[in-house]
Amino acid sequence: MRIALITPAGAKSRYGNRRTAERWAYFLRQLGYEVVVEEVWQGEAADVMIALHARRSHQSIVRYAAAHPECPLLVALTGTDLYRDIRDDGDAQESLELATGLVVLQEAGLTELESRHRTKARVVYQSAKPTRREPPSETSFDVCVIGHLRAEKDPFRAALATRLLPPASRIRVIHAGGAREKELATKAGALMAENPRYDWLGEVSQERVRELLSRARLLVQSSFIEGGANAISEALAAGVPIMASDISGNVGMLGEDYPGYYPAGDEHALARLLEHAESEPAFYELLEARCEARRHLAQPEHEREALRTLIEDATEG
Image 1 (tube, one colour):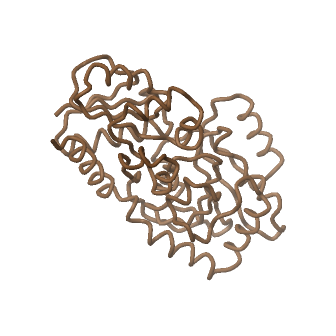
Image 2 (cartoon, rainbow, N blue to C red):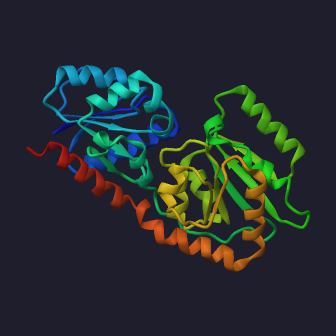
Image 3 (spheres, one colour):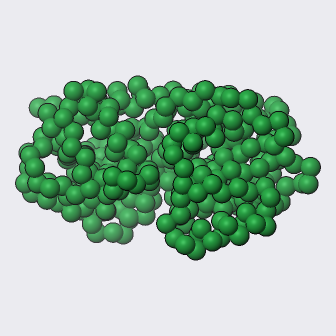
């Protein structure tokens, strides 16, 4: 069986959509499928299409639906799809209608869909390679932020929170992620210059991300919009506790009653949580235990089996 896997992110991109596409292609090939990854469908024969991003892959979705109306057409919804575009963008809305199946990346994403679309949606949690914990720094309490500098990611919230910490705090924020916009890179540089607790590394490899996580005490996931953060999967796989903005995409990854949420955009609340985690071992251990309970969702076998079920269900009959 031949699967056309469409992602709007180019082959050299390190953004989430490309990473998801490459990981899915790897798993699907393990399962015995032939997979072709393209930015735009070129019209070659395929028994199934999986398109990441309802709006940005709209052209491929429309063309495939017209050429192969009898074939499964699966659309995976990103954060901007779920929490913005399907509400007011005509292309994204048409993609929902044409799809024979939908994929969301965490359980809360289902609630964003109308009931008629929810019935054809499945949850596929994103996975990450397991990372062995290494001894953390003895001189600092290192907190990771993993994500590109984009407005939707609220990338500087952790840096702003560190300015509110007491002088005795040993917290240091290490931020890995590239910048598409010069203005955001300039802002990151300015924050580093004025704040010794903040270190922006720019874009780094996945190997470097896993190395940073292996020694980190915490991950901060600060997004305003998130479909299902790869960074959370990476942290769960590494056994690193997480603090996250209380948006639907994060709640769908970590559970409704997770104790590490703060109101999105509120650096004061985040600073209080960070100080609490650094100074109160019982609270830190609670975060560890709750993340450990969700760790199985980030296992590669879990994602591979979810994809197996997705394709088998889509092609039955």
